[in-house]
Image (cartoon, rainbow, N blue to C red; front, side, top):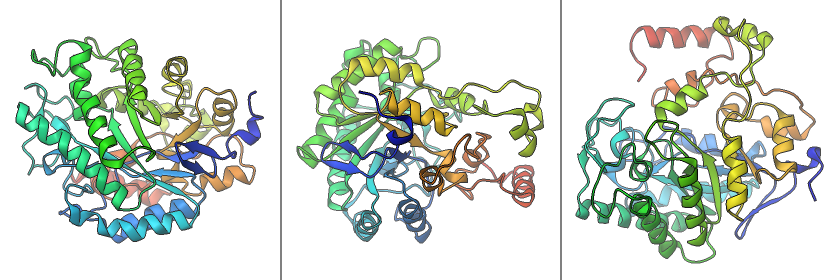
Length: 399
């Protein structure tokens, strides 16, 4: 029986052995709040404690590199060596004490690395569409190192006191690059057929499960399709999801698109009314019709037919009523929010107190443009910040 919409978002949720106080998840959003050795900073601690105190049921960290060669930016958080573990221990305990649950997201950037100190690897020698860097083709030995790095990092996640581990297999990073025929042109056992292209992802999941043991929550953010000609299809994504569930993955977060396509979709100001466009000085949107909410609704509905594990939906969720209906109708079990929690960290508490209608986030994407420089900050809250953003763009300080 479906939940009453008003109650659905604040019923406890469950992923494996972990119970959450509500159905809200802070989706993994790159914090860029580590030092150059990958250790977390006070700003990182403050961010996650703020969200815990603001009622978020479960937080996914921003992506954490498992190997130095997989670092996305110089200020990306790391769990590539044992020393990285210790600073997390007090933070995970404090987040849990505030009633929130905490999963660490592991990733390898592959050819999408923007760190100039990294010599990127990928399945094939194809320039990355995001920034044009040309990677080298990963050797058998390098692939084995990558699989082992994910397993070791997963073990560190458990040692650090996290409640679970979340694997990033979307948005054009390394695991996506191997899964997609758009970026994987290999002719060995790591390329060609879907079975071969899936191989790295499945081997990584096996290594992670072995490291954390049975019962420890292991979830995946899965790119369900690429939205580009010659890319991964939805049918292939659904088959991959089913294989992940068979390997013991405890929940799947639905996403889709390579980074260039994802950014294009995200910049469509989903659900933005003309009034809000005018208020937020998005003048080019004042006379345009609002784009529909929920970027990956079709993928979530199809996934519900293919797997039995909990489904987490992220992307373009911009009204309370839509979030409620998605959970109440069983389309997804959890609502995952990224940009709305950047603009309104206390959004969950507002909704619990009766907030209705649209969230304040307009999906303008300025916060994403600042990745690595004044990151995770909404620049549309006041005119001063908006002018400062314009100055940073004019002076070339943005990536």
